[in-house]
Length: 170
Image 1: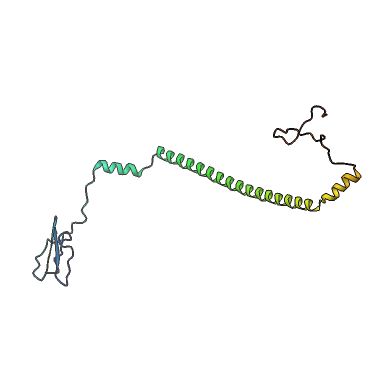
Image 2 (image 1 turned 180 degrees about the vertical axis):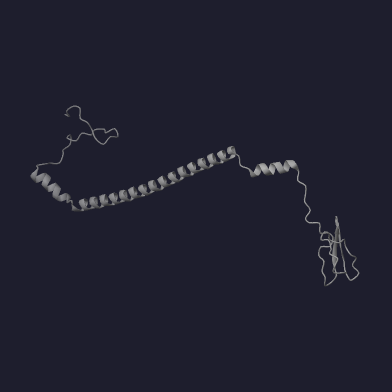
């Protein structure tokens, strides 16, 4: 093999100068030839890169795709504005929801504190009340007596907490 012959890359991919092995590919078939008796493949021709002819319709489509006409820009602008307005509304709703949930949590804490205070006050009042003292004051100072038979009148309450008296009782 001489140094002046350059091999066509389409025919001898995998050329290795150390072992003189050449892979020759022709269409669907490919094979290797080894040793110093490798036949020369087709010489490489430096004609420059081969230019592929482009279909005129494809060329027009590519040119049209590169350009942005007014309608397309207007459509994109409107789509971006609608998306921005939607996202701003969503963010506003999320922030209102966060504020509301914080407010509800604060009100629940306040309610729990009020219930606790109310229970503490009720327990303190119940602890301070002496029923024997109340009975003594009612009987001795106010002249109250226990009711006798016939003095107690049972009135139906009909599910209400109070009774309205329309006429005198006998």
